[in-house]
Length: 373
Image 1 (cartoon, rainbow, N blue to C red):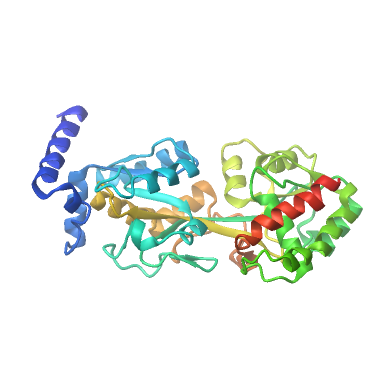
Image 2: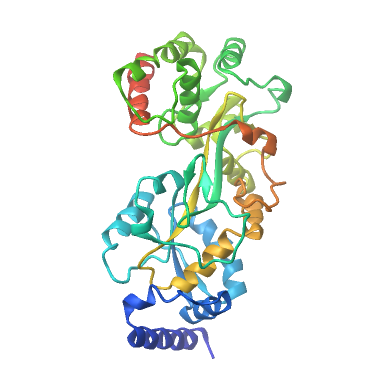
């Protein structure tokens, strides 16, 4: 039997099930089922559609291990983060939607009513190693982390000794004075540079960034941080993006620049930047977080979605993601030996500032620092 015949038969079986029990019931048909029964139904459903907005070609290759293990095809449509979210909201009122598994930045889950949009993942086998909370954002029963990311500093070990890496704003200023033009950061087109400057502002202001208030006195408290950047404006470089930071360090134009751990690891694995570049998280702290997955209430293939989420968040898959993508593993039992930083440095992870304060801070930084250069 060829692949086309298999898919035709699979379609007929699933269509018959839909006609028999009704489309609305299909989206809720996991209640009372054992895990073995869910896996069996998943194989009948035959495919799962995963809406994820980044590294789509790489992730299509990565999920081949799932396809080989379960015989279930994983479809990753083309799409952007905003476009995928718009689709999720637009079809939320439909009895059956198009999305089986939805990936989102974990902080975005905090902005919606999880129980309205997503099914609880209580049907998954018990596993205490899974991660449902990142930087204080709790996915509860509805969202699980599958991709940990961390910003930090990429550096050129040919030019900077690991023992002399700057750890505090004052030490960065000393580095700028001793090595003018050898440090750069972006303020747009990616979050690594904003992670750097926002954590400097956090230290100078002493503000609680988990408070989202954008009251005038809170923005005024950032002034000492703006003064810091303006004082040394001639000694550091403003770059164009996350990628620009890493490429300039690889090309030896810069010696240090902000970067994302997984971004750097991916570029190195593909041979697009030097393999000897190193990465660290300064003691002053830089932002980290991750991405999670959830199952929409109206997922058309809920069993396949459940089996895929179980695989995606397992220790084995998280170990593979750490090895192949440089992610911070999102499972307590995963092997993180391929990470670019030791676990001890992850204690320096900071959460992103809450909104609307973060947006007001970005606007004020551009007005008071970038436009003053």
